[in-house]
Image (cartoon, rainbow, N blue to C red):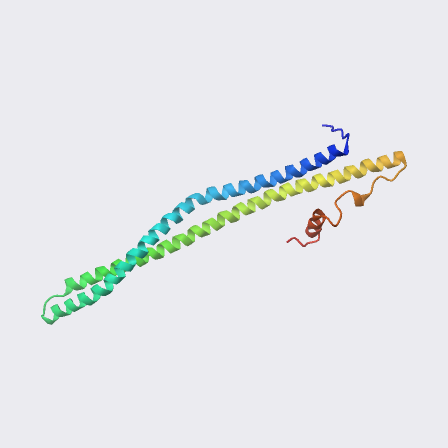
Length: 200
């Protein structure tokens, strides 16, 4: 489609439209990244929340069981010693003590399982974030290179047209220094950092 530029204002408006489109494209890519990450993490966050609730319950239960175990150990051992001293069988009493110890061991085992599972889920979240970030990076590269190709094409076309016009009118029209933003601009500094290796 041929566009007739009748005024400088129209050209400036078109330039602004290009900048706006570029910003919208990057915003869309970033929004897509955020949604992809949120979708992947939804079930992981639900599992983490459930485990956090269970962990809180276990902490409360653990404290009570540990306190009872300490008290029960003293009592049961005393009672078992009494039975042994009378020549009676103390196995039943000692079995009660083992049941208390087993309960504490089970709680500790479950606590470790929860901690390990939470660590796994957090690692899965980091993996999801890394994957979404890498996809955003690749999409951004494609978009940037498209913008870069468009800029290079615009510069080449401008040069070719102005060189042709120079020959026709006999006046210098093509001035490289005036085509892009000067070195005081943020655009120039960004591109200078990029092309000369200072990328951060």
